[in-house]
Amino acid sequence: MSNQPSDKNVTLVLFHNDLRIADNATLLKAANLSSNGRLLLVYVSSLTDTLNNKKDQHAYHYDTMGHARQQFLHESLADLNVSLMQLGNRLLYLQKNPAVSDTFMQLNELIEQQQVTDICISQTADYNQNQAYALLQNQHPQVHWHIQTTATLFDELPLEDLPKSFTQFRKKIESDYDLLNAQTDIATCLTPKSLAQMPESMLSKHEYFFESQSSDERRLDKPSQQVSSFKGGESNGLKHVEAYFDSDAPRTYKTTRNALDDWTHSTKFSAWLANGALSVNVILNRLRRYERDVIANGSTYWIWFELLWREYFYWYAVTHQQTLFLFKGIGQHIRSTQWDQRRLEQWKNGQTPYPIINACMNQLNATGYMSNRGRQLVASCFIHELGLDWRYGATYFEQNLIDYDVASNWGNWQYLAGVGADPRGCRQFNLAKQTQQYDPNGDFIRQWQGETQ
Image: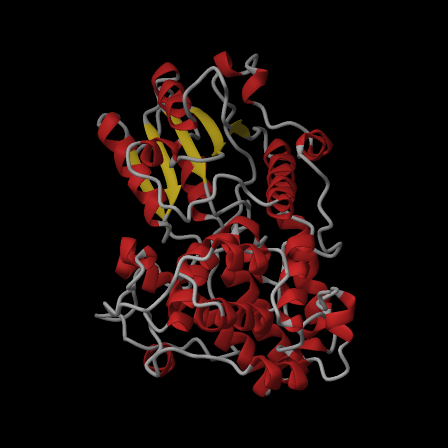
């Protein structure tokens, strides 16, 4: 099939973790393909329903999304919809409908009814999402697929093989690629100045239109106590990036990043990066500008260091695919665990014998966010003190974290469980020592009511 657009082209964009218009190669590709045709811009709440229905559900699978994560997603979609309407189109939203078995079937019907000729997607490390895409391709062999890179620094794994450890990966990248040169910005793709309209037959199908943000928030089961500074959407993410780099926070990031509960002590980019409201290229270029105009030191390097960790886990997930979710991980190790529903519920509800763990879990349940240090502590407790199957903890994070990223989440849990990319093997934190180091006066524990009766 020719890639040249025609007046018969109907191009479909399936948004996933690319909820933005700037530096979005997928949207730009679709804009070019549909310049003389029609354009459908679609977000599907879950493409994996059909896959889940065709296999045995894992015991650790959760069907619901936490309220804070759900709210952040709806804010992001609402912001995207506003941007798309300004370009002449709008977002279509396929979600579970009692009249249809699943959203996958809805999407199939939409492709057939609108005679879609081209589908544009962003490359993803999400194994289940990729399985759904493959199934969709098999059912519509006449459609031409276009896959673009939107989430990473590299279009493909930049090395012949993925190193077994992050340190090896980092050293190789830093020696082979000029990504530490603050004098040269990374190229980003253009933002479309306008978009083709959707097919005329869709203009009256309001059931597909994304509703206003206020309507979405009213539809939630209960309001979230989300951290007020986390507001979903590209426009809010870009504002946060500018506010962060306009402050003094970047120059001290390395020394403050382990704080348990302070907005300015870490970058907080992760939530917008996770659903693609922010481009990693945009963040890295803004970091370089800060290093050129203000200061380049160990702390600004450490921001790059964390972005590279994210890159490593992305390619880790691409490389290991479904092994990312296996109990024995990539190392084929069998850990000794026990099933204890009571301990699992205590951990989830912040009712363990460990105040620092309870405070972290209460913070997560109330806000959908937890510091990186907190995540390491609660994971270590889950695995070692409580002796539970690490996959249950990883899935609970998946359900609730507003910055949930399949690669970073599952890669980090494997790392801490000793079945992943850590060359030192399993890591256990001394909770009393960590409490004394990071909450010596008990302020965080009191703030999040970590003491149990």
